[in-house]
Length: 382
Image (cartoon, rainbow, N blue to C red; front, side, top):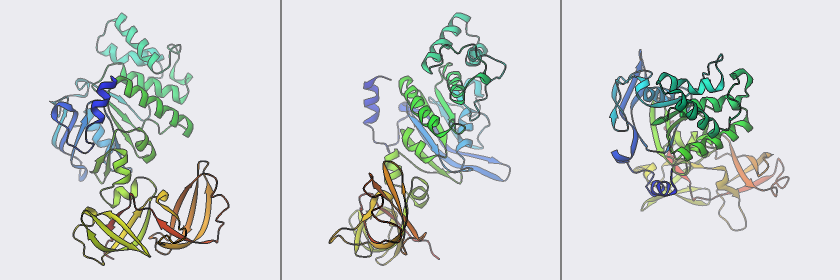
């Protein structure tokens, strides 16, 4: 993708509904049932051309079902699926011009790397000279030049993943589908491959739908994220939107670490609501609290980096006793027992090494809240 094209895409509002001319994949009220179980409930999603859209959610939320519907592995029971403006509900997989990378890679063990990568081209009856050149080009792209004659068993996990990626890309798909491709890799290799796949996707500008249950993976890789639960899409937005402005309790709890503190709604003030916690008054978006009246019980959601030890005359939101601290290299995680927390404990994340040993277990501390990205939701009855 050219730099100019990338600039044009980044100028768009992340929450705007993309126009038909900019959409590579569109789902409209798509439903899928398996017997008495509804795996997907009226899902609607527009994936923009050239973007990396991640489907994020816990196991059983419907994300892989949605991916398989786009791939054509089974038909929807309701709604419409379109790829590049063409309705594909009844179009077989091999005619959808999609590339698929499976969780287990699904390489042919008896074939060489080159034969595995070129298999899709062979089935499309691409001539041998063109096939050989395209295989060579894509192997260079994924840094496997020189390994053409090896079998899958002779490759490392990361190399096998590159072969699977090359096989998906060599057919020049309109849409690339990735089903939890990093799940079998160790932590260091996973991080390395995330960077490589992101670079390849950017270089080719291929529209990509990526499935994962790993929140950090989704936040680091995606242009936008669709958070799913119970067969429904709960929120679609940029990683920043999802992390800083979650639309409901599930998204706020599922994406990233979060502390939940019992508080009270004090008043509404224009587009914000003022929540009272101890001596602190914290401004949160009003929309998530609806028409709740002053005095209503609310749950305040704050990230670990939004909590800090109160200094001097700073309003104290709550107090607690340090349970333990864990050194994480670039930051220190301090776990504090707090009566106002719904779980009985909060996590405070402080940068650098200065915090190590400064507040040993058993220390009583006063806690303040940075309300820049705090959100609140009405506390469930009971």
